[in-house]
Length: 307
Length: 307
Image (cartoon, rainbow over all chains, first blue to last red; front, side, top):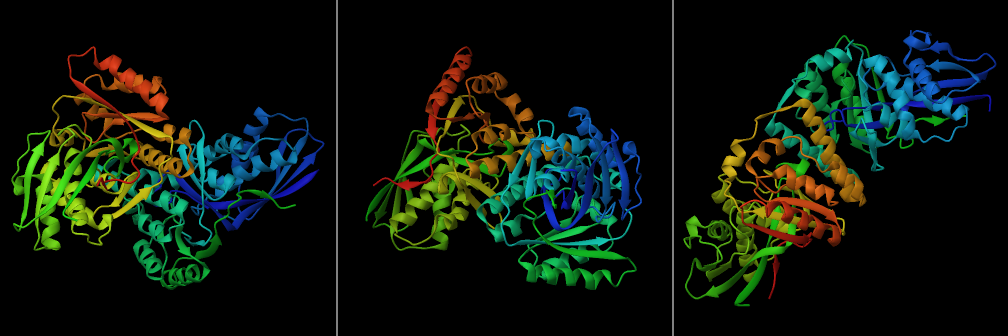
């Protein structure tokens, strides 16, 4: 195998009550990457389409992740990477995570090495660190493993893949405003009232229970965030109008994707997910903001080989 | 049916990462109550053994709960209650909840009414309010329903019964010191650092996942509390020595039961649970404190009729 093509998916992190611990993998939108063997040793990014990102290995998330992997598992074979970015940088649906995950998974596949996906996560994390300044796995984990993922403990890589009820469909709206992750972090309070902590733990426990028992009503009742939504919503125009319109259209729940500005809604089935998309569109079209809207089932596989 | 005898179990609330939301039902120790029809209308407590508690309906948790139930579902039939307290008041394993649950369930059974256990909870809560000043369902719910219970939302009585892996065994040590629930509440900080909130949500999500997937290792890794243990442990002599000895003896996890002073440990199987009991005994015997130690499987049924 001299060349492979892979699909590296977008993802939703900070899933409502799962701030910093819970994410899910999307299917409709993701980057494509072609990874080729080359006679010239070393790893190079030779092409990037779709976004204006640096080709330099040290300055590119995919490059840093690739280097990190190859430092641990060196090869004599030269590697060339082509990146076709479909996920917009800064959209809040795991653009940098997709690059990092894609590079590491792709090289590992190309070299036909028998390393489990979960064990590839630390290298992808190195790439993510470049983008956000901190190692966060809440997009890396779902993009790599697929489905819903829980980061129980990042240091020990204690990551659990949760069941994903088959009728769940995600609607994403990406209002194209600039919003830096570092800014979205800075706005958070460092202390949380105990009563909100109790609600948050009750909700995430309910959500996990709902995922295991296919209880869509319980999932819906549990999809609330008590600790970051209030602050972060300030950074997103018409956030509560968008959220309320989604719930009125029948969504099970709605929240900020990652640190924004994208907003996700979870619905039971495509018909409602489309109505949610329309409700988003009705509101955002009245503003002078460009936007994208996606509808996606949950991607249960994560990053995968296309050819 | 003119008379019934019921068993109303003890329970563990505030289960590690499930502060205020998660509890489990014990089996070995529980109160017994005899509830009889009488020609004289009204409800009376005619006998209490085992604890020095008031017979007056208004001052007794079982009485208040019974009254609350009978206000909603009146009867012409007189009712007499005998209470055989086995759960020590103030032990931290749901003594007042057992009284409240037993009274309501017992009267409902005696009157052969077709009301579900979950719908009896509000009346039991009224009794619990007398004991703790606040309506908390974290002992009421497991004592009523059995197994592990999650209070997702108390107001709407959104209570979920979780699966309980069959090999789990609980060891309880009750150091007989006086510790008021109100005092144990007052010692808590009203604000929690965000990073502890993240750990707490990650752990409860891990625990719920472990319960559904019978993953004892995951249950063990998740049984941590990040928000109340540090403060409350100050009220319990040798708390960390007791906890560490339990973990060294092989317990999956160990924490404060309710607001203390009892400590619970969860183990996989009776052999380890007994070793945990011995380890507790070794430490507590060196102090000048009277104590009780119990070993119990999880009681999956909750309160039940004996005859």
